[in-house]
Length: 220
Image (cartoon, rainbow, N blue to C red; front, top):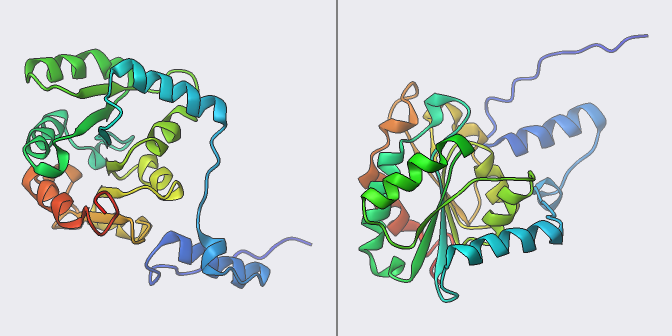
């Protein structure tokens, strides 16, 4: 009267989405089309408005594009450093595609003050620090209001994909199979499978952003 559970090898699939689609067909006999496989997320209007008000409080100009950067993940091996984020912002601000852009750095509540100090000490203008305060929906809301997301491998990557926003993701090579490949996404992988994300250099990220901003839709 019980269920028989067998392991299924999904290592040959290029994404977890396709792997799950295979499992649905294998286990339930349900064949999912490409459209049915795509993730989507509906954010309550309340949190869109709340987050938009927070962005307005930053003083971001209405003609500025918003670049959302997330450098941390639960697993330290997937994190970038705030120093790398600061250096990336400095490089981007020198490029013509980012002259009229404001940057929002996502961080944890207990790190907010130190990040603000880093921004101030580096004399960076139009750079703001964000942390979710009251709801899970604040994070996807700010992503939905951004024009480009640059993030390490964490929930931000998958939320950005679900919201169909331009994405540049910093990934460990060993986790490449979970990256959502679409026209609007770009991944930068570590050189070696065992490398931590911090091994990805700032110049590599900068050059990858510039090489892909047209394809992923940041620049039309």
